[in-house]
Length: 160
Image 1 (cartoon, rainbow, N blue to C red):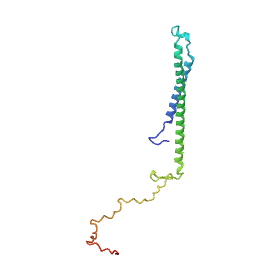
Image 2 (image 1 turned 45 degrees about the horizontal axis):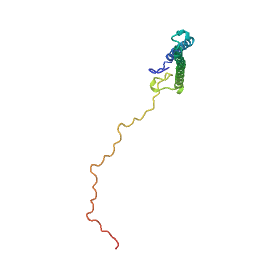
Image 3 (image 1 turned 30 degrees about the vertical axis):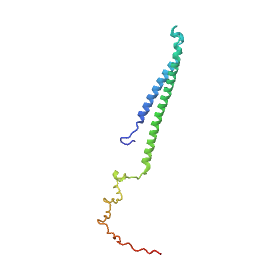
Image 4 (image 1 turned 135 degrees about the vertical axis):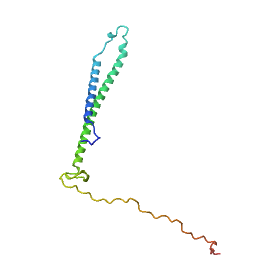
């Protein structure tokens, strides 16, 4: 059972796949009709004998396009069905895992009384975190006095 607001419309996707397959059937029928209807050079009369030579490549391209469209539509319908089946199976499996994860005795404290009808168990108390961080030692207002440097440098003892 999907959660509120989250649902995959598998039935609608299946219905759409059937519609796509119906279009593929219509394309296949049109392709068959094009293959059956061919006009020989006599149909164009004496003055237009050149037209079959010009139109034959165009008809071949149209047949190829119809073949490709039929294949693509059937692949799309199959992919839509596969997505609907896979998503439904995954959702069902996840639901089973969630329902069995806690075992039969799982009771959440905020969900009301347990199934046995007894009082809900109280959760263990939690120590609340401190609201304010511990105070830091403030820096001194006046720095300590420095020893003044000597006015006369000490004599150097150098060997002569």
